[in-house]
Image 1: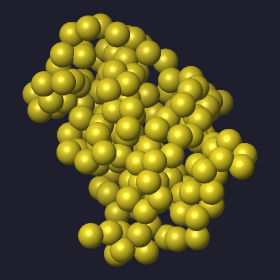
Image 2 (image 1 turned 120 degrees about the vertical axis):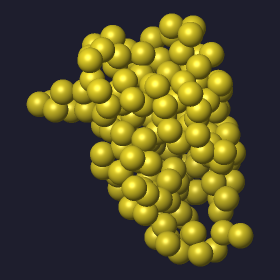
Image 3 (image 1 turned 90 degrees about the vertical axis):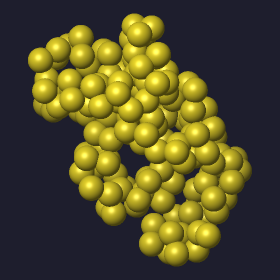
Length: 161
C-alpha cells in the first residue's frame, strides 16, 4: 500500500480476509475509504475505532510530508465531506506511523480472529509500505487462515448470504 492507504498489491488470502480487491475498482482499493465509507467496515474490523484513528493519523503524516499531493488532498476532502467521524478525527491532529501491532478481524466464514501486523518500508519505492499479517502458531487464527486459504474469494462470495 502507499501512504494514502491505496492497496497496490495483495495476495489471495488478503482478498479473502479483508476485501475482494480484484473485483474492486482502483479507487475503491483504498483502506481509508473502506474504513470510513463502507458500512460493513465496523463488522469486519473489530477494532474499528482504533483502525479509524490510526488511518487518519497515517493520512495526516502523509499530508505533512507531501501537502501538495493532489490525490491525497482529494481523498482528505472526500472523507471530510462524507464522514463526520473522519472530520472529527482529522480535527484532533493525531499523527501515526503504521509500524506493528494486533489487528482484530471478523470474517463471515470463520468468525473472529486476531492477527499481528508488521509494516516494512519498500526500498526504492518512496511512500510504499508492505504490511504483513501473521497468526500465532497453533492459534485459532492460524487454523482459520489455513481453512480460508483453501478457498478463492469467489467461492466465499457465492457462499455468503
